[in-house]
Length: 314
Image (cartoon, rainbow, N blue to C red; front, side):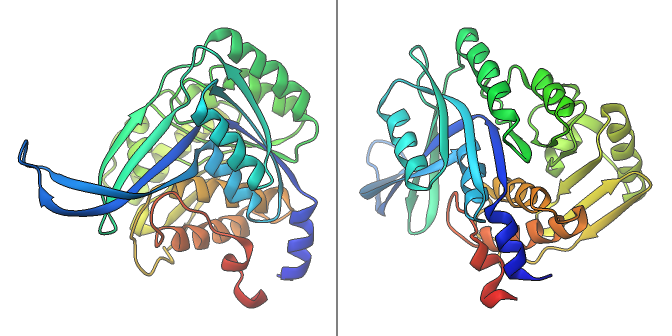
C-alpha cells in the first residue's frame, strides 16, 4: 500500500452522509461530595464542550481522512442547531441541514467527572413529514456527485425514506453503506454493506451458539436483503466480514477499551472512505478495524485522522 497515493485518492473522493445528526454536549467537572437531597454525586461543572454526534460524527470521521463530505439531515431552528452548523463549517463538512421549525435539535448531554461519565441526558423529537419529503428531494440532487452513500440510522426518524433512497442509489450504481438501528432491517434491502454490532444483529436474527450458526444466520439475512456483505462489529472480539461463500475475522487492535461512544461512526466512516477511494473490501475493513482500535482509547465521541491511522506514512 502506497500511503501517498492513497492520500491523494482520498482527497479526490466525495461521500454523501445521510441520517440522524445530533449535538453531543459534554459538561466536565469535579465530584467530591454527595448531595444531601439524594444519594447522588454533586458535579461542579467547570467546562462545556460541543462535538458532532450521530451522522455528524460519521461525516467528521470521513472528513478526517481528507475526503470531501456532504451531510444531509434535519435540525431544529434553535441555538443547538446553529452550533451544529458552526461545527460542520469548522471541520470543512458541506452542510445540507434542512430546518424544521417544529423540531428541537437532538442533544446528548454527558456529565463527566474524574474522567468518568456519570449520566447522559437526551433531548430529542421526530422531524415532520414535510421536511423529510424535502430531504428526499435534496438527496436526489446530491446523489450524482457522490462516490459512496453512507446512511447513519440512530432511530430518530430522519431516515423515513431510506428504502427509496437506497433504490435511487442503486439506480445510480453507488456503493451504499448503512449503520443500522432497530429490528426492521428490511428497509435496508439492496444496500451494499451494513455494519451492525452484536446486540443489533442478535435482535434481528436471534441468538447463536457457535460461529457456524452465526455465519448461517448472517448469510440468510444477507441473501434475503440482497446485501453484498455484512460487517459485524464485536467490541473486544474485533470484527467479522460476511460475504457470499465465506467470512473473515479481524481481531481487535485496541490496546485498551476506554470509551466506545461513537466507535461505530468511526468504523463506517473509515470503511466508506477507503472503499470509495478504491481500496478493496478486506483492506478497507482492516483500516476500519485499526481506526476502531484507536478511537475506543479516547474519551467520548471522538475521531481518528489519517495521520493517526497511518503514523509516519507506514
